[in-house]
Image (cartoon, rainbow, N blue to C red; front, top):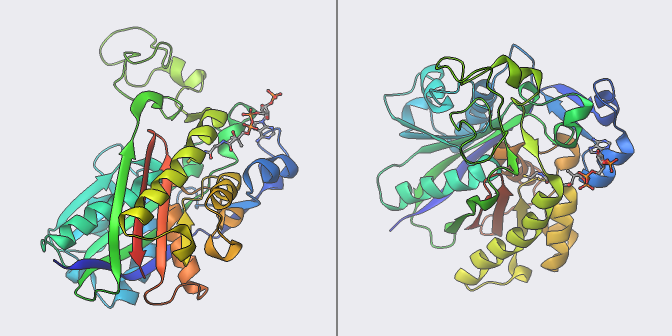
Length: 348
Ligand SMILES: CC(C)(COP(=O)(O)OP(=O)(O)OC[C@H]1O[C@@H](n2cnc3c(N)ncnc32)[C@H](O)[C@@H]1OP(=O)(O)O)[C@@H](O)C(=O)NCCC(=O)NCCS
């Protein structure tokens, strides 16, 4: 059975840099608070009307495909992970297929938020192992700047997130010394509402009370009401301390699971590339696993948390900086809304 390798990787971040001081024009916050609690110094925001989640993904994909030596015509499956899609439906995958003039291949959107890319990689890995596809394009991309509450009300969440995209081309290899060794996927829906965007949606306050105010209960006024907009119920919400507590348990657990499954320990890792949730979370994980600074890659300081894009952006940057050589043991790990969490262990 073949293994899958990342044959090419690319990233794209928009040109617009927003520093923590720039955030002060929208809300009551400070550079000191943001850096101390999250590690973020600045983030990129997409051009408001000139860029979308899909177009950023395409920019990253072009680089990944170029580095893999393939053209859009060679791609036989697209997997697109995002929580900020261009359209509620259809997904971004079909927009990639159209814009890149690909063949009538399958296109799958993954909605697993921060762990979306690792889930997507796992799905791609299964298709490669089974022999079904030979060139899978996997994209993680987000345009958070379009969907956040940039007022003091939303400051606990909007200061953390940034825009950007990462992409890989997955191919089969018979080389025993390279490729994805295993992937590990988990979820616990008990805390689904702790980090979420409830509206617009079809929940009708079924799971929890008061998530949405409906002007009246007539059909046609349920999906998106004036009251929801007035009360800011259309923005994502997060209870940060609860997310933090769960993340620092599940991140180490899923990393150790991947290492143990393959007979390794943390000291064998050349690099851990964690989802860039929050620098304090990464530092906690590093400490818990007794990893050296050079074994953990962080770039949240420059880009903020880019959700489904964060792992491929960080992995790409690590590779571009020469921190990964052929055969190096690398662990990708992510945790986020759902809650869902996941890891992938690979030989670069
Ligand atoms: C979000 C997070 C940084 C908030 O830090 P915290 O210490 O837990 O802060 P709290 O939410 O308890 O808020 C503490 C205070 O800071 C304030 N505050 C929140 N955001 C602020 C901001 N951007 N600027 C200034 N003050 C802010 C709060 O209003 C609160 O004020 P109060 O004490 O007067 O009520 C932290 O909980 C965290 O990192 N959680 C994990 C989140 C994460 O990683 N999410 C991504 C997962 S994929």
